[in-house]
Image (cartoon, rainbow, N blue to C red; front, top):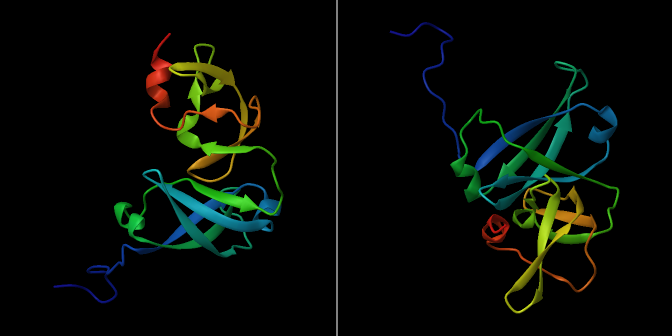
Amino acid sequence: MVGAGELIFEVIDPTRLRVEALVYDPQQAADVAGASLAVGGERVPLTFVGSARSLREQALPMLFQGEGEALARLAVGQAVRVFVQSASRVSGIRVPAASLMKNAANQNVVWVKTAPERFEPRVVVFAVLDGASVAVTAGLQAGERVVTQAAGLLNQIR
């Protein structure tokens, strides 16, 4: 027996989800050019639906809609990281986020191939582009070959 107004079950399409993100600067909510979500290394584009006009716990809620098979791996209510692209531009070299490693001094590095079977770490400064890639803004030169797969194995060698 169920009382009036009680929820028995919900029907959810796992390939179409709404994602809520919190932003602490209201000016960032006005400068949304696009958004994405990283699900297991795969980038899922999100469509900006809108933002609230009132704060909730000192943050402004923003609502996004996503579609794709990768969203089926998420659970309803699961915490995720949403990457919002702004209209401003960042100059740098785009590399996969998996290329970034930490060295013994806790600095961000990427491994560069300098010769056959010879790799050197380079300390870099980066800005996050989306869930799958970053822009290296300092520390790399144009034309250098950055290790994009198995960088963690190189980073284990001391």
